[in-house]
Length: 186
Image 1: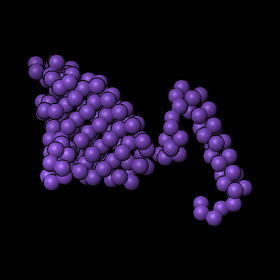
Image 2: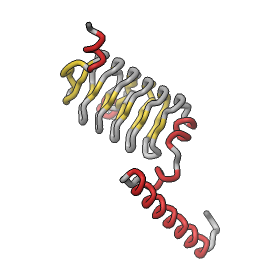
Image 3: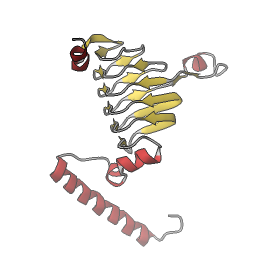
Image 4: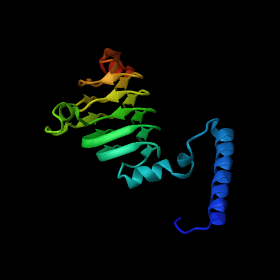
């Protein structure tokens, strides 16, 4: 608002504060939660559409989206996440990507060690349909996670995870099977 008067800026600031206070009250009454200010005014489904994500997908405004990211139908991407598609990222349908998840399709290890003489390395990441990725999971470049997986909170996924399993840890390892895989093995 270059050139705006101090009075105009004060009025705008007061209007934004009133909007924030009203949104906090309404959201707290209805959902028993509060959100960062931008998430009160940026519609998650509109942001997903603007990014070219599939029908019914939603993404919080606090999510950082880089490069070529494809997200399937009805997939929820939580707050404070990072979706790095610089090497290509494909997330399936009906997935839940929890708060704080970081998915990388590149790294700059060799770039840093070579004093910038070597380029960043990239490799695509694919997450299948019906996956739950727990809070604060980090997924490194080149990983494929199969359909129907559960990845436990705070895990570091640096290798492929087959479909229908539960995996967690640092590095993540298969711990068991999901109900879906157990039901289909009869």
